[in-house]
Picture 1: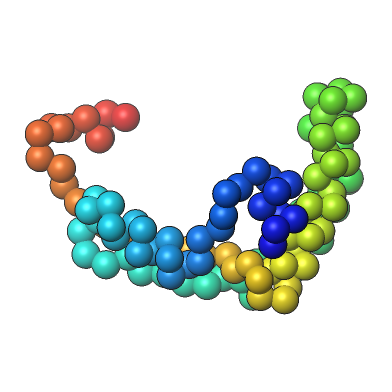
Picture 2 (picture 1 turned 90 degrees about the horizontal axis):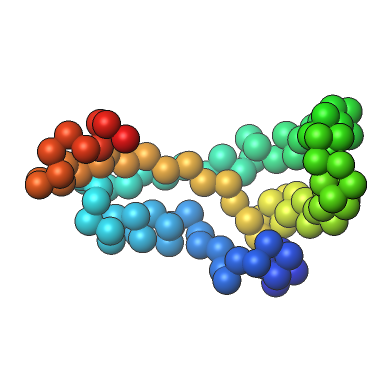
Length: 112
């Protein structure tokens, strides 16, 4: 986990439960935040996602040599992330919440 945090310059990751609590603590949700762990369902997509970068190199070609170097640097990190999901160190969470109406902002939210 430390390697992943360092590679992607994250100070830390939040668990599904912790992130849900943080969302509720903002006061911007109307009611509870519901969650689901989709790790098992998303794990099989990792190899295909990695392969698509090889099979469809348009993005690499578009960004030239710097893009190629950056992509190659990411391969070990992506593989490490796949491993972390596979052994349960990381989980893929989905969140659902209803946004609380904020008085005083009128229709600004619908215009954004």
